[in-house]
Length: 192
Image (cartoon, rainbow, N blue to C red; front, side, top):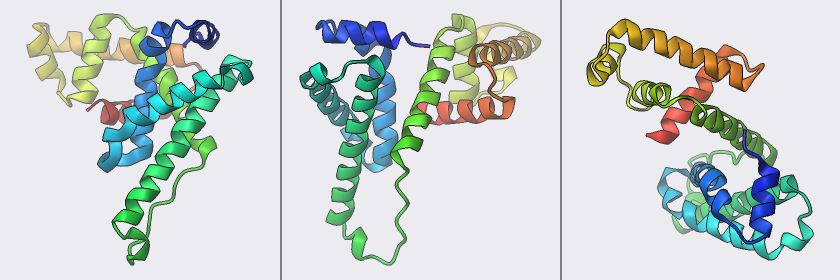
């Protein structure tokens, strides 16, 4: 889990390095998800605008959670505006196709916080487990293929996958195993 208070204090003091190392990648993923595949190339612009806005509004953002929520809201509203503009430009409003429903901001924030928790838990795993996780979930390799690439026995891969899932369950707390599986699937889709 990230130390939002420490990152916030550094950000307010003008040291943005912890912010860009820890939170920025997750915010890019969040913006990309909000924008969709067609507009995901605008994710960095949305995040940078939100960061700049939060920096200029920092006097009114007294806590780390208020600051982080402000950034997420800025990204959300910016991406919704871009999506709407894009749809309008392409005459989607006049078409007979039903438009997908934009998720509520609260749901989007909860999804992002969940992915942040998963990302932090994955980053805390030893490198060998992260490698197997990436090969298995992001690259879609089978245990035999992973074993061949790593130069180990297939049973070793199976055991290490079981150990890494146990570590993730431990680090993520009371989240049911099926929810962790869904989170890993989402993580893999976003990592691809």
